[in-house]
View 1: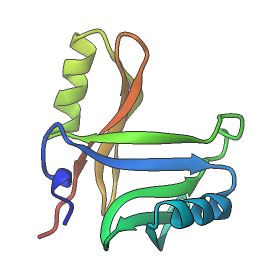
View 2: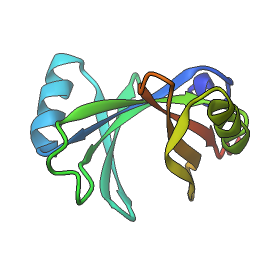
View 3: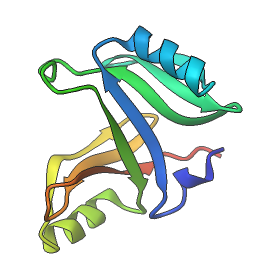
Length: 129
């Protein structure tokens, strides 16, 4: 198990959102050597990136309505409680980019922006041990 999925404050996941998923998979498997495990999600196929068998990130097609957004990597930080962390962010001058949501089998997440507008996602994982 990737221990960063349990450690509050750890950068725990990176996710690439792209127009051409197959091209991205080809590039990163060749350049980095990641293994790919494809799974079905409600939003479509999700491609888990693995390093030595350990999940470290994912690649997915951009969601509908985001076609004009450039291809980009997003980062997740593990937190003990998404809602409490969002409240702290708002009290410190940040805001939610999208409200907290639950993704069954994964966890609770949202994206926040800091006072300068930098965006990062926060997540509390569903851990099955």
